[in-house]
Length: 427
Length: 210
Ligand SMILES: Cc1cc2nc3c(=O)[nH]c(=O)nc-3n(C[C@H](O)[C@H](O)[C@H](O)COP(=O)(O)OP(=O)(O)OC[C@H]3O[C@@H](n4cnc5c(N)ncnc54)[C@H](O)[C@@H]3O)c2cc1C
Ligand code: SF4
Ligand code: SF4
Ligand code: SF4
Ligand code: SF4
Image 1 (cartoon, rainbow over the protein chains, first blue to last red):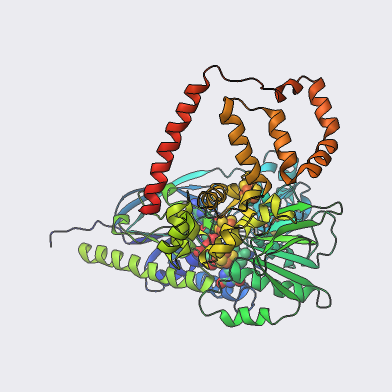
Image 2 (cartoon, each protein chain N blue to C red; image 1 turned 180 degrees about the vertical axis):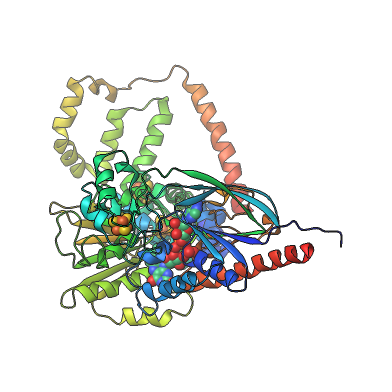
C-alpha cells in the first residue's frame, strides 16, 4: 500500500466528563499517549453535579473516584484544565489542534489547604451549583474536584483581594502573573467528548422559567438535594426558602417538541423517577411527587425501577403534558392542563415545579472545529467523513452514564486503531 | 342518496381516511400524539359548553366515532385564538382542522342546525352577500330571534343599553332596518360570488367523488 499515514501517535481527548475520562484512560492503559483537554477547572462533567445516580442510587463519587485514581497513577495522560480547543487542522493520523488555556492563578504547589479562600472576601456565582448560590472568588471547584487545586476568579485579579490571597498562601502556590496561553498539540486521532447541556428552559415560554422563582430545572433540583449544594441538601424553594414538599415534575420540557428539541432526551424520565426518591428521602412523612407525562420511557432495562416508583403511594402519575404554569398569590406555581385519561381539567398548585429539561449537545456539531457530520439536533454521527475524529458519550446522543462509558470505550478503540496504523507506517 | 350517506358509504369504517381526504388539513390528524397541550390551552375547554377538546376529537376520529364527531358542537366553539397551534409539540394546525371539520359537517348536512356559531355564520353570509355590505342591525336581530319571537324580545331587551350606546356613537343606524346601505354594483358582486361557489363546488365534488 502506498498510503502513508502521517507521524502522530498521540490521542487528543476533548472534554473531561465521565466519557472523556474513560476514553483517555482506556487509551492510556494500552500504552498510548493522551492529551485530555477540559474546559472547567475540574474533571467529572455533569455526572459530578448529580446528587445520586440511577439505577443503584449511588453517589457519583463511586464511578468518578476510580477514574481519578487510575488517572493519578498514569503518566501517559497529560491533563489540561481550563482549556478549550479552538481549531483542528489536518487529517486522520496528522492533526494539529489549537488550544486556549485560561489562567488558574494557582500552580501545582497547591495543597488545597483553603487559606486563600478564608482570606478573600469577594463572592462570585457558583457554576457548579448552576449559579443557585455563590462561593468565594478563591475556590475549590467542588468537594471532590480533580485536580484538588484551587482557582482564583479573574474578577479579583488586580484587586486587593488577589494580594490577600497571595499573602495567605504558605506554599507559594499563587501566581498572579499567569496569562492566557495558546498552545498547539499534535494528534493522530481525536475523541470528541464535550457532553451535553440542559436545554434553555426560558425558551419554553408557557412554563415561566425565569419569571417564576419556584419553577426550576431538573439539573438544579439535583443540586438542591445535594449536601454540597446551595441549601445544604434541604429541598427548599427559591422564592421564600420554604420546605418544598409537594413537588411537580414536568416531563418532556423542551424535548419531543418541534418548537424546541425534536428528539426524546431519553434520560429525563429516569431522572424524574429517580428524583421522586429524593423527595421521599428528605420528607419521609409528607413528601409528595406528581409526575406529568406524555408517556414514561424507562430506557434500557429500567422498567422495574419505574414499577417500584409506581407502587409508591407518595408518587402520583398524571398522563398529560402541562399546557401552562401560572403563579398564585402565595408564590405557588399552578399547573394547568387536561388529564388525557378521562379528559379532566386540572389547575393544581404545587410548592415547586421541576422541569425535566431536555439534553442537547454542549457543542453543536457544526461548531466543532474541523468538519464533522452531525444529526439535526447537533449530535455527532459516526461517519467516515469525520476522518479520525470520533464522538464519545453525550456528544453523540442523550445517554446515561453506563451507555456514555460504553460509547467512550468504543471511541477509544477506534482512536487506538488509527494511531497503531501511524506507528506501523513510521516503523 | 344524501351527501352524508354517499360519503359514509364510500369510507365504510375508515373515518380517519374520510377526514384525511375530505377535511382541509385533515391529513394532520394522525400526527397527534395525545399529549393534551391543546386541550389544556384551549380557553373554551375551561367552559362547560365545550363537549370535546381538540385532542379528544382527534382520538374520536381515530376511534371511528363518526356520528359523534360530525354532530358535535365542539368544533363550532373554537374562537381561533391560536393558543393550541403555537404550543402543539407536533405543530398540528389545530385551529384550521377544527374549522375544517365544522365546514365538512356542514357540507354533508350533519352539523347541529341551531348551534349558535353555525347559525350566525349562515346568517352573516346571507346578510353580507345580499347587498355586498353587512347590515348589522338585521344581523343582530336575526341572531336574537333565532330561538323564537319571545326569546328574541328578551334578548333585545337585555342588549338595549349596548344598542343605545352604539346608536349614540353613530355605530348603529336604526334606518338600516328599511333597506340599509348597499354596494354600488350588486350584480357584479353576485356574479363574482357565483363564480367562486362554482370553483369551490367542483373542487369539493371532485374530492367527494375522488
Ligand atoms: C437531570 C439529569 C439527571 C441525570 N441523572 C443520571 C443518573 O442518575 N444516572 C445516569 O446514568 N445518568 C444520568 N444523567 C445523564 C448523565 O448526566 C450523562 O450520562 C453524563 O453526564 C454523560 O457524560 P459525558 O462525559 O458524556 O458528558 P458531560 O458530563 O457533559 O461532560 C462533558 C465534559 O466536557 C467539557 N466540555 C464541554 N465543552 C468543552 C470544550 N469546548 N472544550 C473542552 N471541554 C469541554 C465539560 O466541561 C464537561 O466536563 C442525568 C442527566 C440529567 C439531565
Ligand atoms: S492556593 Fe495556597 S492557600 Fe490556596 S488552597 Fe492552595 S495552597 Fe492553600
Ligand atoms: S425521556 Fe421521558 S421526559 Fe425525556 S424526552 Fe423522553 S419521554 Fe420526554
Ligand atoms: S397539542 Fe398537538 S400533539 Fe398534543 S394532543 Fe393536541 S394536537 Fe395532539
Ligand atoms: S384556536 Fe380554537 S381549538 Fe385552539 S385553543 Fe383556541 S379556541 Fe381552542
